[in-house]
Length: 162
Length: 427
Image (tube, rainbow over all chains, first blue to last red; front, side):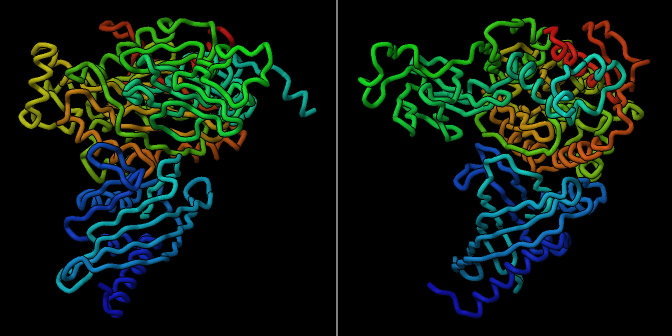
């Protein structure tokens, strides 16, 4: 059930926009992309049961708001200043799952400069799984599940928007 | 010249003083190496929890100091601590973090060991000759292991301080955590978050019972949500939390006095009303009786360090694994209580909120410890100041513990007192 080319392009454009807003720490614009039933999730393993095991991030909509408030507070030391970042999305696959609803997957590579402390260039990578929905004509993100390759290894601060 | 500097014995008495410690303690690789030897390879350290290997054949990889070990449950249902090293030519025998196995097979020459460590066999054993004794070639066992209420402590030395001497009164802190379960046990089954800090390992136990930093270092959290109210340490606003020296380097930020002032249970659990946790309250009262159950539900879990590497972090269990003088990994898992599903569901989400590299709390500690390490590259001033509270700390008549205001450095001085004791060869 291939999507029409125009819809595929629209969804890709949405994914690129989301990536750029995260890269540039444009917190309010990024937050506005979410649906009310949002889930922002970085599990330790792809098949992890979140009711039984701990994840790095398991934010519902309210926690996303708290996260953004904290980042904007001016006292989030681990993101003061915000990490300069750029990420690349590739291997994008999109499927329609109903009227106005979609599942997408993309590989990503992210270079993040830990400018607040060590100035290490951190290299993050893996696959992102998205659930997207059209609400009042606008594409919105309901789920962003980030499967880091090294999620179960010792990792550096994930205080930026991944 | 450099060589001579390296072999000169390090005088810890000169570097650790009562009201200050020398910056070199955090940066010198020779000191790190001696710490691994004296604190981590000879002394007692936290290694894991029996609930991490619930079934026969289960195993977990761990590091004790700089040495790779395996926690396993053998065929007789006993918990074993084994060095993760083939007895033939030294290959690391197990590469997976955790799992269940009947045997460990060395991928190099095929020597095969039972999960309890016994050598089962090898290809072409005839070549081993007449001196071959299978029973002498099992995986090496960690010399001393002590399990207390599921907490596995280990010492890699055959002889030394007894476990009871090491843990001392701080056993009560482990009890306080376990006794929040109506079955008296915890279950660390939610997996570990692993967080890399480019900082010296000692900053973590120091920071974890430092009540002074919270208001500043975690200002962004305290301004963004009320969900972590236990951390609002502020003696100038009437907070009656105290910090305590339990002896042996074990330290605590004791929040219970604040909770007792409210005379309400679950202030440590977001102030949830009792009516929302009916099964938990009923089971606690059933097991411990009404009065004791209520006391435990008011006091809540400990916020304490068991020297050198275990952090009883309220609803979390955490430990540090030193990597080098300027790198350490901190592990965190939710403290799940047997028989308390109502608590556990929320504890999982609390750990994610507070403890991981992606959480609202610890990334700031990690960042600040890294900046501490960078600042210490400056060799002037030479010392870190630890005098806060020296003129007002007191022995608490209720428990005989040296105690002080929650913002004081009594806990830090307690850590360094034990450090000096061990590093100068007294323990």
